[in-house]
Length: 404
Length: 224
Image 1 (tube, each protein chain N blue to C red):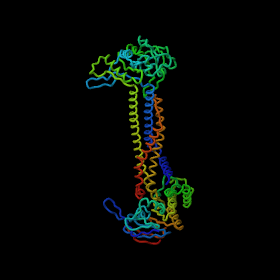
Image 2 (cartoon, each protein chain N blue to C red):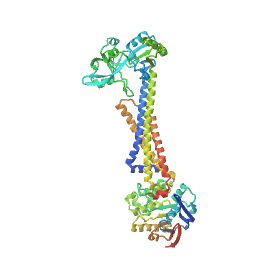
Image 3 (cartoon, one colour):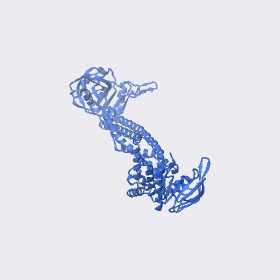
Image 4 (spheres, helix red, strand yellow):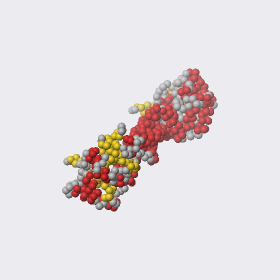
């Protein structure tokens, strides 16, 4: 018997129960679609992070406040309020390896212009931020060291802020209200895109001193980023920062540092690893749903074998061998899973596009993810089709012919 | 053609052995039209299953068209059924989703006949039973008599050694039953060997030889 005949029989049987076939396929469609979408999201995040690593340069160090500890309870890194603006000034002044220093504070704040308002991340920093974070002003100008010194109420806005708050009007020279304090817009930052779910363009940059004193009423920093003169001096620079800040913070030599220093690219590599584990996790969950879909196929195939017992008996009576019957039912479950897989690929690609449109996350649909999901669907079809098909093939023709 | 020597068939039903055939010896020659009659429980279904190679004897020997059937495995039996036996059932057993033509083609599907040849032979057989004009109709669009004629056409396509009919008129009204029996008679006259299983005397009367079965043994034989 030719494969063509098996496909013909499978088509007849599935067309005879369209709704049932569709519902059975739905499990595979959702499974394959979910796998492709999840892998695409993961790949997108990874591509984003890799780009950031490339654009950062490897001579940047990030200083973060240390973890807070009460007795045995340790809070997350960066939870202490130990880094001060004075620390940044000290590094700029005293260090021989560091060329640029950028202090950073950041908080969400309510931003208002005209009748529009939005909750936006406010970043307090200094002009050297542009150099250290490789993020430059595109139109107008960044604020200056004087603005930082005199705590001026000026700001630079990101692209998303322009679209959301200003719409068609040119923001430069306009006044906006951040936490009800009026700020003049000096410039617009170049587009950074989003990293995973974080839109890096929905930000407003203000002088760090203004942010601390006029907006948030705090005296500590979220962190300090520094650029080291050359890559070869990274270790030396780290040791120097350690020494300078410990002395500044008056830490006894037996005490742990209340800050830590990270290589920026190491930090992003960690982030990349995290995103990879996350992708595995999501794809794993999606794979489980595909397996559940496979169980659905097995269930329906078992029903189908029972329903068609007499047909199987008839086929055997006129000369069908075991392998002919096995093939017939295996092809039927394979057709279910492959059609489901093909539709699922469409859904997955659509899903990935939808996610990047709606959530603004970057997604990368890759051929290997599609192939993986499709092959997985095919294996599910075969694996869960074998048992019902064997059951059909082993039916005794006499009993099958008599079955009511 | 059919040579049975002392055939026994024992089924295991749970803990007990049930002897359905207690040593049946039988010879049917080419071109015969034989009826097997007997009350229910007489073993005629078992005998038919063995004659049709759906089952093998527990002991004794059975030879169909020169092939010893005892000791063959499932696949070999399937092959013999395909080439040497044409079945006609009481309940027609047509595939509901397929049209008459494809139903008639079915035995050739398992015989690797090319699709073109299959169609040709199937159409020819439908013509023999007078249903060429119904080739594209499905069983549920046909009367009982038409369905049984499609089944007869299907039984004939592989040019079998015997045509085995199990109560072929059991689900038909008497008028249609007569039509079907006339077809069998015509087929027999054209040289086809027919074995008919029935419990109706009127139907058995169409054959030329009647074998009576009782309690797993041949009780007697008569010519009609």
